[in-house]
Amino acid sequence: MNRSAELGNRASTVLGRKLGSELLRLRDAAGKTQQQAAETISATNSKIVKMERGWVPMRDPDIRVLCEFYGLEESKSVARLLELAKLDRERRKAKGWWQHSPQAEAMAEYIAMEDAATRVRTWQQAFVPGLLQTPEYARGVVVSEGLWQDPDEIEGFVDVRMRRQARLSGPEPLQVYAVIGEGALRQQVGGPEVMRAQLQHLLKTAQLPNVRLQVLPFRAGGHACMAGSFNIISFAETEAVDVVHVDSIAATVWVENDAESSTYSSFFERTARLSLAPKDSLGLIESISEDMQ
Image (cartoon, rainbow, N blue to C red; front, side, top):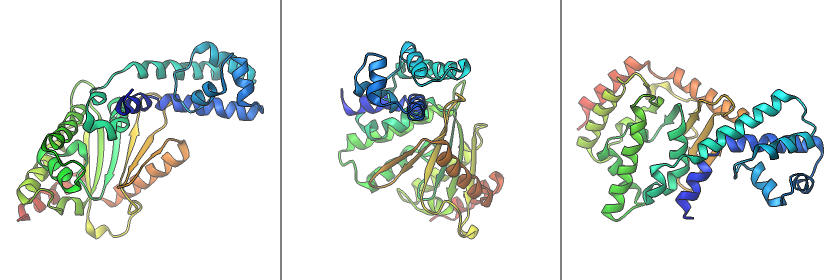
């Protein structure tokens, strides 16, 4: 299996990782070892490790046996775990276009989550969010980064970014709440003409009912999100916690627990409150576009 397919498979296990962490918590509370758990379901230690890390789909009989072994007798709690397992199995069956694109490999896990999400909140202080980029702006970004040299590879990257934007329309469009630092709007990625077109595209996209756009102006001063940009991904399933994606030059960090996800949500909301209202944000974007030379 190639790396992109592997990442795509792992990416569909948001619920699987939630289920695995629940089983791990139950095992620790019961004082049982992985070896004991493995013997209970006639499996190997490695299978228990994979289950607790959400790497594999889980069978209902295994979950029932483990719950009984761990002393979980409440029928509602067991039913909740079985429902998680069912949703996870259904999610894993989905095959995405990104699994067949070399340029999508590095972002395969994020794209898969975005494809399954109902809402994305994004704070960006250096770039226009990918979901809101024009092809020319996206091309300017990838050329500046220098990660791709071959023209066909560059166009492949741009195509991936544009295909992601299909989630903004359709019967169940993705809800996008974007807060963008003013500096990202003044940085002339691709040159002034490309940037003016990008700003006009933002004005147009912000009119969609599922897109909320705010700008954090320079005059806002210090704010909670100065440490860096991030995306908060939310899902329809009540058992699926928000997942936070933090991407830097050298590494990607995923945050998948309630406490830390809530911290990012709080920081996002605090920064959004410092930002201009949507109508005033569009006015600033229009002004920047008119002044750009």
